[in-house]
Amino acid sequence: MSRPLILALTITASFTVIELVGGILSDSLALMSDAGHMFTDTLAIGLSLAAMKIAMRPANAGKTFGYLRAEILAALVNGASLVFISVLIIYESWRRRTSPPEIDANLMLIVASLGLVANGAGVYLLHDRSKATLNERGAFLHMFGDLLSSVAVIVGALVMIVADVWIVDPILSVMISVIILAGAWKLVTQSTSILLESTPSHIDLEDLSKGLMGIDGVTGIHDLHVWTLSSGLHAMSAHLVVKDRMLSDCSGVIQMGESMLRERFGISHTTIQVECDRCEDAACVFDHHK
Image (cartoon, rainbow, N blue to C red):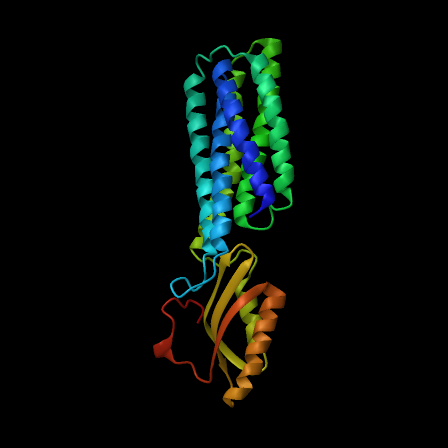
């Protein structure tokens, strides 16, 4: 288990209750929106912790790749929950635009300031882990979105205290939601791409093919597939056509291929089949690189 995630979960769970009560008492949509966002954060971080534990389970006969994709599923759920809550906040802000209620801006300012401290601590705890996995990046984005929300709510509260302009509250809610929505959409598209087994964005398939063709003795390549198993763990399978030779000589071709893929493209899991003549009858039905 990740200790930073556990601490972040404790922080978000505590301040979800504080912000919700503060939002109800002050009648601030921005504060209640932030409380709703923090509630999804609590669920998201809890889901991230559960996914990390599941992902550590060893592979078995039924799950030969283990449970690595559990983290990607958690990231997708995290992103989708952020999209959902953002849309709800935008809808409620639109509904309030014509007759925004009077807000207890002083209470709103106090609660938002406490939230800023809590969210700042959460962001600090998760910053170093945000690049480790897509799942942990999702948790970090939740906390960072809350940090931005707290800043916006504080600014809005100050404006309302000084100028009594209540329309600021729904406007702030929309701004917060749009910022959150941008990060959430990226998270959803990244996790969906992995689940669809798309070619990793940092890998040029044509460049990879040229690298394999550059191995001494390789005359052709087909049935080439590259995908991501989990964050930072990439896999590849391919059939290499080689000049006719003894089977024992082919191990050198495979070793050179594996070494090149690992060093140049960061692919750690490879499956390479060598053959002296391409068998059309055995060609992969998904092959688009003939």
